[in-house]
Length: 290
Image 1: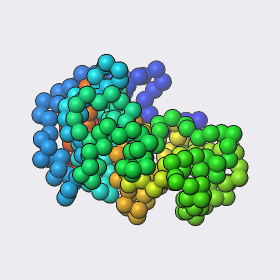
Image 2 (image 1 turned 135 degrees about the vertical axis):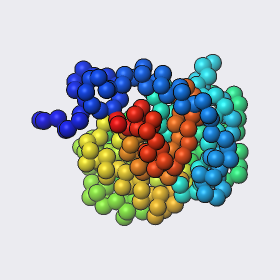
Image 3 (image 1 turned 90 degrees about the vertical axis):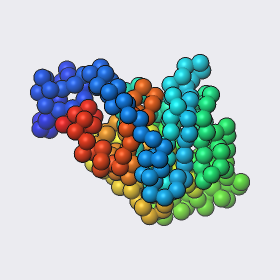
């Protein structure tokens, strides 16, 4: 099959498009990205991007795994019903931010708040059930030998009763006929796009206010990538979900998001609207392939 125009040739490892002379290596991107962090955006700028009041906020986060500190004095603001996309070089700590919000990291400093309530030390189960935060994993997390309906019901394991979980699953089926038509089929027979839809839908069973979405496009064909972003757009703009995502396809992520943050070495280097970062020539050179 012929390669798409502008696709980097095999053997080239890095970011961007163009000839061998213009392609940046991963090390080049990491080194040049460090220069972006010379003027860390102030909290006031982050608040202004919410166009009102922050629904989820992070102040001075210090976090990592075990004794390894990955995130250093990190701040974040996102308003209710907004979307925020984290971009940056490999190893910048993007997924660690999502892990920290959900309770998967060792937090040694800072505060994470939702709707004015400190949720920093809550367990992942408490964050899902009581703080309205759901995490959609980066990797394929469906149970292939279980039916589509059984996979959905797994998302309601914290519901007070099985009847509540079944009722929530029926609401999902009414919304997504693609899943309803396959409710009794093994999840292992679903296409890549359908599996991602099932993962997103399973997170909706607990009716969260905030969706943490880790690499929604990873491993998907282009037609399924568009479908997944259409689903996320609907959840944000018609159901009022607040979305914080990490996306390897920085252009796609910034086109989708209201707000974009650039992370470098575990710190916030730049912040702006998605459109502003898309138009920034340095962001384009480092992360957008142009």
